[in-house]
Length: 120
Ligand SMILES: [Zn+2]
Image (cartoon, rainbow, N blue to C red):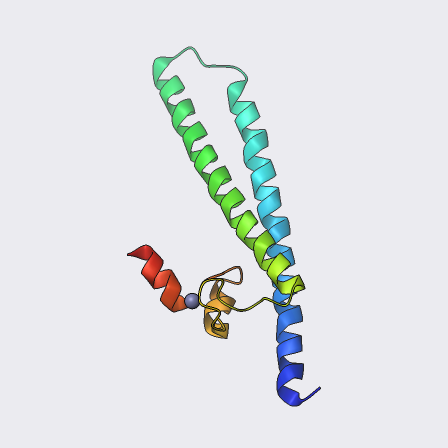
């Protein structure tokens, strides 16, 4: 193994650890929002203003839950790609995604250029 592939190997296993930690954290967050949603459902408050607050809280919880689930599926896909040796390549154009971008968003599946095209 030459020096570069050794470095890549170390980097990849570190990234895998980061992704696994992120997956655990996100799974926990998804679980928590579901538990909280069950709780808010319990005693429906009589006061109308309180009901509105309760509904607003539920919406926030649902949003947090949905975004955590979304991120979780990204993280799972990144781990799958990592296992198949398709990480860290852009799923669209196949270019290697920059390490800078991946240290900010380890589950990124698009390179900066493709992601920018997507947002347009
Ligand atoms: Zn790309």
